[in-house]
Image (cartoon, rainbow, N blue to C red; front, side):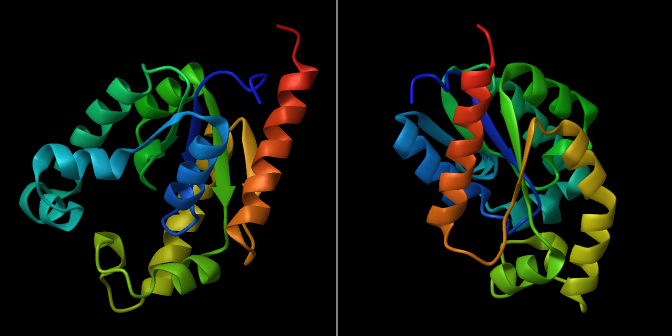
Length: 179
């Protein structure tokens, strides 16, 4: 798999599988794995909902941008970003220029099924989480698509199948590029 050199950055809405697939990709490709949300929690010592409560979304996004800038400068890593990381143009630029960006695309209904019991998602602590996911999808899907080098549809399938599709897509890419 050494033909797939460089960094891999996973983007997509919450529940798309960025962390789960990112860990498996890193293991399979013998790379270090990072999750920008987990890095923020480790550095601050508090949960993301607590950061949102104390600093608001703007405070969280500033922390996120700093973490993404730092982590994307590493080499041969897999990074799972938070769902909103692509909202800031500087984050999109750093991700696109420092590695291959893979958009894990999933429909809001599937995302709700995967996230419905997770209380660590501040944006979903609303009366109608499906409507919120549909709004986020409508707002962010075009941004994810413009930021991505590759789009992988995440259907209601086993993670291993999606993982195989990602690796297949990346290996096709690496064989077609002249380096």
